[in-house]
Image 1 (cartoon, rainbow, N blue to C red):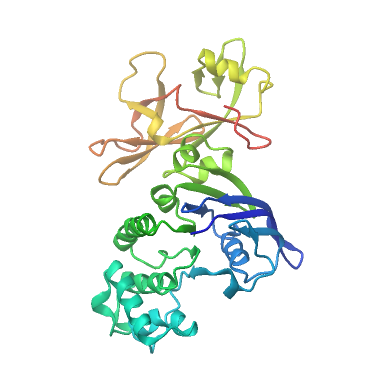
Image 2: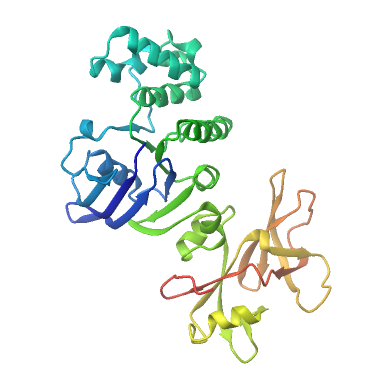
Length: 361
């Protein structure tokens, strides 16, 4: 197990700056996921930690600076997206390879490989070659090859990307179970926010080489730090509507809608906004739908299209010139062009500064 402390990490590729002054601490035994879109700098961060890239800034493991150490001296295990198994070697030989490089004796190697293979439920596959394995089995072998070394730190670069949906769901549960059983520090990279939300102890959101927010999955979802985090985490993504703050009426208002503000919200807003330049954000599950208009808090909107997904139905509504997505019950039915009524949950919205993107409320 290991603690990892990254301080002021920056990385340039020529004139292009891939990482901007990243500082991040991972606790001993923590499962931390670095989440962001393609090109955010996630893999580059892992490669810097592994010692595969030169960089600015310092990296400490268990309080010891490791900048000057070679990749082998850092004692980290890197699990790649492509698995990187040797095609002509058996599962046993692939998993044994790191231990052979350390000159373990054969009996000790075999015992260690079989022990990890049983843990990963691949002990019946040890004589097969990678071409004879499914994607999920190959992923387990790649993970097992890393685990046999008992490294201080696991670095995982989108290891589930090449699996089909069912296997990804199964492997998410397996990885979480394994990390808990091993009590080992995991530094995991993905662009899949479902993976991040379901597995991480904490999520670090990265975009264009800049760290956006580091927090628990619940807080990243419920209290996004800025517009990027709010839009990237959540499916479907959060609805965003331009609005203004009407202090006299105590409401947030768009062209065709308004939301009344509660006393505590007014206290938070006081002195922070100047009446314009705001973005109102609300998640699809926090928008109510009703065929009728029970009171004047409901707003007329037209159905644009419905997306039945089995466990829920996503309804795209046209509210004036703005499109709003709503999560409805699975039995919901409507036709394009139907007029319904929507209402925003006044306790569950978010407010952002349009100029800076930062959360205001």
